[in-house]
Image (cartoon, rainbow, N blue to C red; front, side):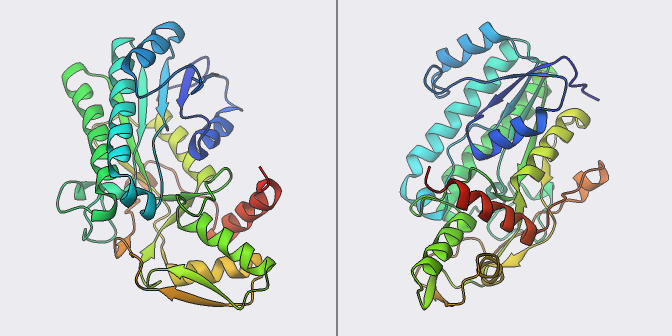
Length: 311
């Protein structure tokens, strides 16, 4: 077990949705939290990262920093997604090794798995088939991050691990319709449809694909749990083990928001992978499970959106 008491922990990407949740999860622990503001440290620049780590000397690093986005953003900016993510992870992981960081956790994404992987997807499904075309650039970068951690563990004995979360949502999510993931996009569309008394609301795709969703606070709890209790070569899936169709998701969001209009589905828009459900038996065997139901998590997220949308 990696005891957090007295440790100096750098949460890379502390201003993002996941980074903020990890910071909240660690606030009650007897540890010192370190951050590297974007204004002073560009994580895509090797010299910046090496200088920061050499100066601040954290005992542990949690790599939440990444370029993220939904289908439209991934498909529109493939060069940005692969370059930025490769640079961020390579710089942090290499500099962490050089400066003697005791433990590092790299956060990936369930997009690493093949488009047609058997469901639910086990950790062993990695690199067994072709990726989903709309986000393969992001996926390749995340796969490289996993392999970097494994390589430093194999060659140098570094205690570097990886966690693969499913689709996340919650406070501080991105609600911009051009770059957001499905939950914040639907939530904003539904809120605006209700406010404008629209008769219907458009949903991208057929609505028939299935997705798994994890509240970001559950994700953060899982990250901290793995940091404390896991040390091995293979990455670990982090999810609920439960999924819903996009139709079911949209109907639940409608109920949470109180929108009585109809749903219309634009089948000309991409659906992405037919189904993405993680096999979470490994993390369950380690002793961790999520706490928030999807409906409760959506209600909490909508309340946060109402209180913060003007910002």
